[in-house]
Length: 130
Image 1 (tube, rainbow, N blue to C red):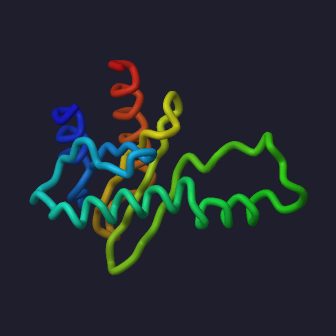
Image 2 (cartoon, rainbow, N blue to C red):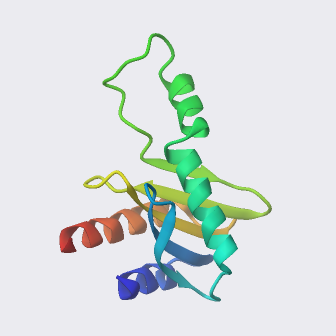
Image 3 (cartoon, helix red, strand yellow):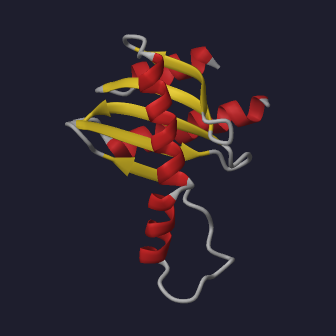
């Protein structure tokens, strides 16, 4: 998995971190980075992914995008973007295992559309192996 994360990170200009996380455990399981982030940074990254994909931020997004009575058929949030402090954060939930996600940190110049496409392909490759 590390090789897959290295490959996608190196292919995305402006990308500095790609991490594979278990959202249910709140842990980054594997990471590729230009410089290894401190564990506290990885913990915050996983916390941010959990909030944006599962937590209050995700629930707020669902209410905005699907106003009206609660609809149990509304799919969970499968991707999220945040842009704090001059960086771009992209989070993608696994389609086959909703507790797994890829997390990406890059510059604001990173092409988020290209990053999402590349990360989805990488996530599909990881899912195919498990």
